[in-house]
Image 1 (cartoon, helix red, strand yellow):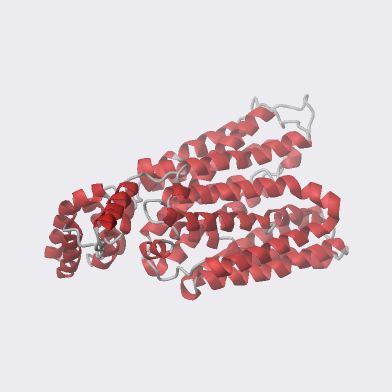
Image 2 (image 1 turned 30 degrees about the horizontal axis):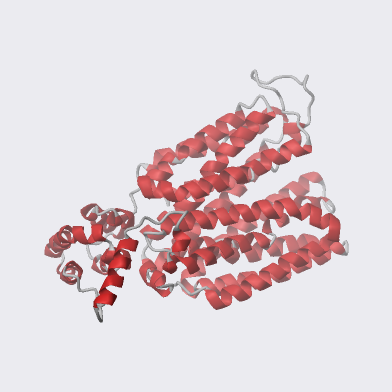
Length: 500
């Protein structure tokens, strides 16, 4: 749970400029300085939009580099190092003396945020027990929406004079807190095992599970196609067998795992070549499996091509649902019926609803499965977005206001967190980093495209633009129905084999 502070920082930074826009930009160059810093940073709408959107550019680059970071320094190590942009970004923004400095801080914070939302769910999936993997991973999304709620609350309280600097600088406190508590986190045992640090992996797993009876879980790692075929892993099998035999002395149940390791060591994979040609093909496969999987070559591996395409569509389709435009419209819709102060409170209540609905999804995802949660969420969201479009188009303010809450309530428990969860379950340990990087890159690209074309489209076709979002939800829902498998109760290795 300690690593959830990383996605929480992403949630905080993504919404930090929403509330204080007026007090950041609305003063002249001769305004009184505060603590040797200008009271505000006068800028036009285009410049402020750049300060807001540059975060997505940093997020895209951070997401693409996250897989490499997680493989080089480990999941825990990468999360620790990733606090550097979370420290530097808020400092630049809080001490900004020009719009350029504010923009630079937003970009740096985006780098950290993009990496955090790749590495954190990867870590959570790898350390979670099978029966609770969905619930634990959903805390990634819960942390994001909690971060959004925190920044909305801080922004509302600090929405006066120069105190916007406190709002944008408070992310520094979250980064320091994450650095302080991360020393108590352990490295992912699956990552340690993949790096042939077998004794350490077993020790960490026993600590996480609070039992020495870990033979079934370790057997799954030993039976992984990557472990069976990788020459480096096969070279380490005598060591692994010794570790498991040592564990067997403490727990007789490990004898079965030892036998499994013996079988792997002796080459008994259960696949027998019919002739020399088949054996040659197997040799080619062994050679291919020794190739590192990166963001540049993942789509060249047949077993990763379909899950790669699915996670791209899951994340890109999530943005095509129009969820971010809903948050954009919330304040303007509510201000038509209520005062500015009441509207601010109601907008914050949307954040509260987002947290509560996400938490409800976390409670049921391992009971009902990923597919029911995903499809029910998408269906309810299609209806809610359609009602929002009708309310705005027909000037039915009350319908539009209620629809805002319905859209958030339908998105938060399913279509919000499930794409992140599936992105960590579709890839084995070998491709987890590269697959996760591409998934979040698709999300950032979708965010940028929708933000760029929404207002021009709305000017061109009016509220019919929401029909595009409904259509995207329907098309994506049909595609996911036929191609996205249920992953509840299945090991990551078993899910990966299904795509082969």
